[in-house]
Length: 221
Image 1 (tube, rainbow, N blue to C red):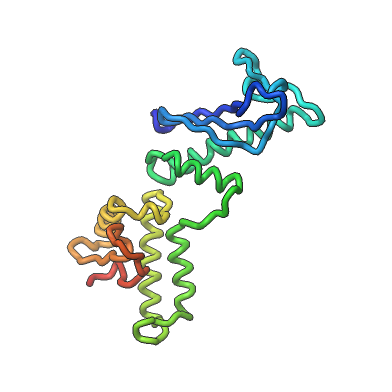
Image 2: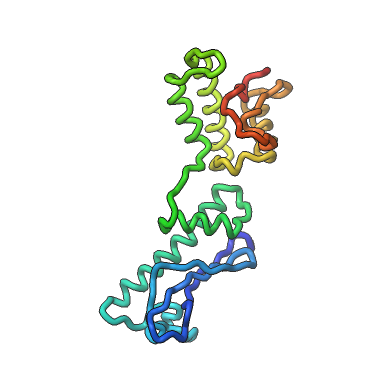
């Protein structure tokens, strides 16, 4: 399938330079392509640019550094790019990986930006753990054990949904498609059919930041 194929190569930013030039990784997938800079540099004269040669797109000679080790670093970069592509497809029901998201994932993998967690289930779990010491801003009282129990029920159902659908839940995956599929899952798995399920915290149509667990999404109104 076209959406499952990726090709990774390398080229030089300035192939005619007399001094070491940066090496770019060229990523082709879904009929599109983009280049991403690596941290590696090489003198163009030491780069194998002949497509008929075995080590095309790799170093053929290095001064003061082992060629095998240098090329191994490029191989690791290539493997990382392919793993990001594979993991995204598996975690997101084979959906199309945009170039912007791909670049963001590359920045994280190569430690160019600080990774911010987008794990929705982790967010919920952390929220629950902090609930015992939180205070309801409306009532001024501590969050009751009964309310925390509802939070845990929500988490358990979402975790079950994630496991059985084999989908990693991230904030950007909480869409209308998720909302409809999740309701269907509740009806099938927990016999919630015909009940009014309040999933206000998860509705993507909200314009204001949602207040997690304002109402339990699995308990009838």
